[in-house]
Image 1: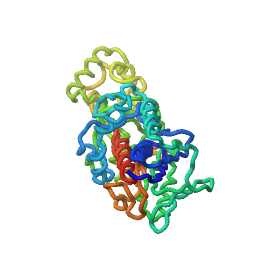
Image 2 (image 1 turned 180 degrees about the vertical axis):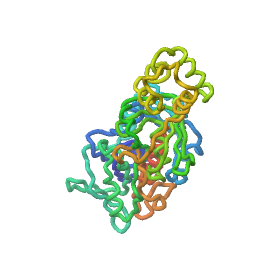
Image 3 (image 1 turned 60 degrees about the vertical axis):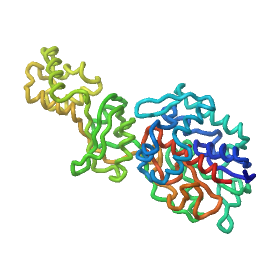
Image 4 (image 1 turned 120 degrees about the vertical axis):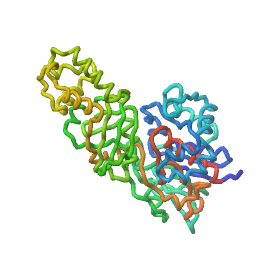
Length: 411
């Protein structure tokens, strides 16, 4: 073990892991965080439940990391998802596995995860300085010598680990200032785009459904030529601008290559039923409400807020008596319920994205150590690297694994 002085910039999951591991190896470690407290983004992750990793194999982790997943082989093998689970278990955080392999603390509280990470830092004598903005990473002759803070003070160091996140969720401190620091040191930053982000729809009826959450629906996204890009099953929510929720956020990563344009989304409101079975169900409801008007006949089938929209889109006269609805009209309604279509014309800005796609070019980083190939003693961890994954605990896995590897390698 060496007694180097290591500075970690960024107190999120990647930075905390890097700092704790570097200190564990006998280094003097200072963790600099620009916010008044650590882990602001971690605390709101997974709606406050904190999806710490995913219970798949290493190949599954790679497959679910469309943004340069192969770059992460060394990081994932050095500190795997199972290692992450064991790490938190040893710190007193019990975990559970949910749908899709998502791993959560059994308490469903991100505060418990954050508390464990703070214990980890304290146990390893990491010096934490909050409200510490860094202006520059200092290097001389291609080697790290320290950092310059915004207040003008300089802290000398043998190594710097940069783990400041991307540009998503700037209210949590990820404002993109890390990119400028590394550009000044000669690194390339690939184009930054929002990923795992809500989508914007063209149709006006979307706004009428604002706040409506749909569970157990399936979605299919197709390009302008009708080729399916992505499909999923789960939960979504309508917003004043379009769509959000788990299946939409997951889908957004697949739509990046299309720049979120010219995409058709089809929502199957009743995926458990075939068209034939759904037609039988509609007929039963129509028999039950035969003496009501069409607009009052769908209460058993659909959420109240959705009914006026479906009635209008069906083309059936809302005042029409149910017993007067033709077979052709009923069939058209069934098709609509199995394929409610909307046009995707864009995505919300990067500040509303869960993660940033793009970042420090991976071929300028040693994947076995997370060290810069341009500046000796400079290491990277987490979202600032040009790597990103789908929802399901994969992005936090990247943060913990790259943080661990950087912390291991900096001495």
